[in-house]
Image 1 (cartoon, rainbow, N blue to C red):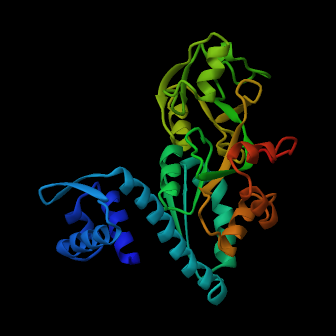
Image 2: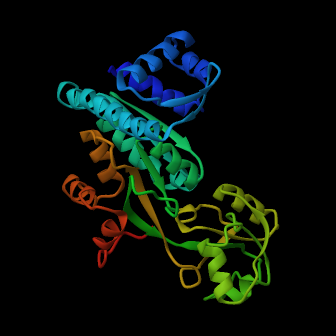
Length: 323
């Protein structure tokens, strides 16, 4: 049994049993992959894949178990190389972060600047997407860290560390009837067209707040981009509901920013990564720079929790920063 054979069966599954596509991605020949898979099956005395003619059709039940274990073995073999680099080249490597637009635009720039000054030899990559996309990338090993707010799709093989809370804010033009309101209500908001984030998810905090008040939001434009929300508020399309961090330091004098913390529940931003990830020292440092209460000792302690319910329980009574 060879690591190369294990890599072939895992990659074939990753490419929907398409051996031709797998050979292209691995820069090797299709007959070579097929031969190595057959040699492995002969050595083990079982079939990992069923076949229709010369084509792989599906993974056998025992094949599912072997492939799952093969993934673990390949991950561990990669960890051996990473551990060696941790000692031989502690300040060299790469870090891929996947996050949403709001985090990338408003909370990460200063942290990334500090990190790059501290680790000039680390290659830093950033991917942007929805919370769901970011979680999938981290789970698939396409990114080491995901920084997201929605962890509803968190699986048991991932760990989510709470970083900080943040609230929504309402923005209106200075000549808007609500501009001089000292304390707006959700009933008032329901009377005006709204420009905000996506309300299509019935479980979203914004949607739930209107439902609890027996109100129906009049969403006329939705986007993940807070700057676009500001633009359309300026155009008179509607009232804006944005993350407060997007207007904390705004210099746009046309806007009036109204507090909405009493209307919408706070959200929490998390750093999410695979439990199998070997955290390099510079990764620990990035996590702490982004969220100072998550020092190395705390992160290691949280990683010992059996599930994310235990992780969150350890933060009961802990006052997280509010952005």
